[in-house]
Length: 198
Image (cartoon, rainbow, N blue to C red; front, side):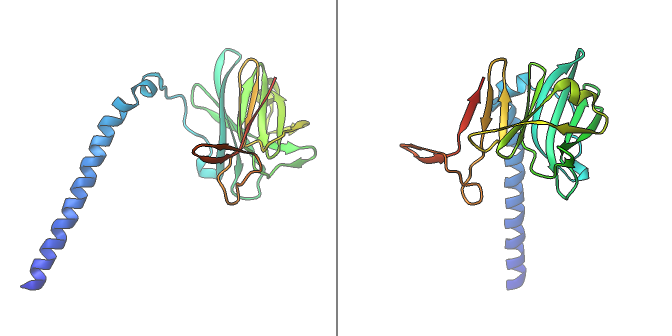
C-alpha cells in the first residue's frame, strides 16, 4: 500500500512538472513575438544556413548585392583538417562553397567573421584581416587564394563594414579566450576591444 502511494505521488509530481514546462513553453512561444516585435516585424527568411551537415562550423555572415541579386556569404572552418570555407547562397536558396587558400596552401585555421563593403570582402583570420574583391569571391570556381592580409592591433574575431569604416572586434571570455585589452568600469573589468579602420 505504501509503495502504491509513493508511486502515485511520484507520477503526480512528474505530470505536474511536465505540465508546468509545457505551459512555460506555450507562453514563451506566444509572448516572444510580442516582446521582440521590433525584431520580428523586420525579420525576413532569406536562406538556410549551408554546410551544417558537412562538418562546417559557421562563424560569420554578410549580405550584399551582386549583379542585381542579393547574396549571403557565410565564413567558417571545418571540424577536421579540410580547408576553411566560404559559402555563397543566392535568393533562391542555392549554395556553393569555395575553399580558402593562403599563398600556396589550404587554410585550415580558424576562419572567423566576414563583412562586405564597397565591393570588398573582409575576412577575419586570427590576428589578421584578409581582403579579396567581391567579384573574385563570386566568380571563383572552387577556391580563393588570399594574397592580401593586414595585421590588426587586436584579435580579429568578428568584423562589420559600412560605407566609411571597418570595425574589427575580438572575442574575450576568460580562460582560453583571455585578452590583454581591457576596460575597467564600475561594474567590473571587461576584456576585448573593437578597433576601427577607415
